[in-house]
Length: 306
Image (cartoon, rainbow, N blue to C red; front, side, top):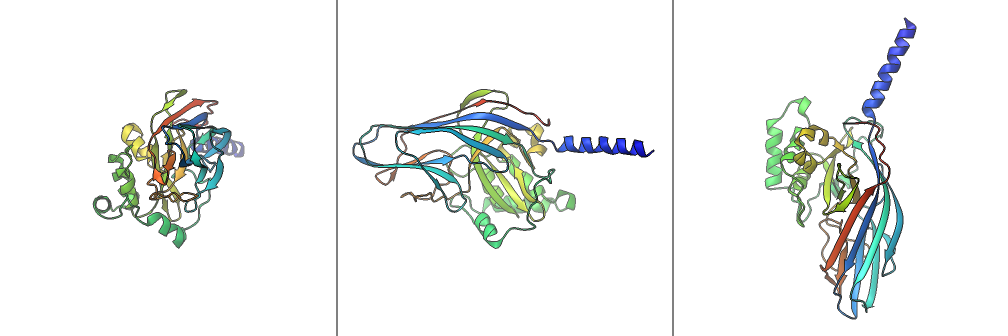
């Protein structure tokens, strides 16, 4: 009898571990751009977001090449890493920059994974930083109205976080303004955190990357940071429940937060988000920049399937 119990316990443990197993994806990421048609003898300053390692991605810089010397900096509010380059009197009509990364991205399962201990609550400083409105993300008006309506419609304890699912009908649009879904998230009754990077096609081993991708986490006391991906839930309705509580491996993160004052400070206004290079010429934002992003899988290790 004891032997049978031991066998059953072992089987149960194996099943439980497999249920918590998480996917990972390893890939090379190519981040390149060219600043074009520069006026002669101009002062040029360039800020580049730098991918960095955290709990869900391991990042190694394979190479960093540029027509100007690169300096590694760190933005003060959120700790984002930045490459910075400048020239006081540029004599070149164009400047090229290229950074190659090796990345291991891990799946983030927030609601089902207790592997990472979390503090019982956030500090007042952390709450203030994440709950305050951004220039393009208000915490009043339509976003707050949607949140209040959703909370009113769902009061049962089993649907404690149901208001957040309202945002799944509002995709994270690829625009220069604040994504609507992220704005709604910022009006929810929890502490949200905005993250941005690039998507990787799940059905390709290599390709160019045309645009950015953003997602969010929100903090619940006693549960920690819970991942939410509004746009992926919008695009893949069959995985709607999965993306409320999980971030898959098909992404690479470059920065966190909004209204960013870079290091050294830019002359222009704070950045709504920071995933593309930001360039100033003679103290003014300079838009004539061509982008070239791509990825290629190196090793794909699958520990669990959804």
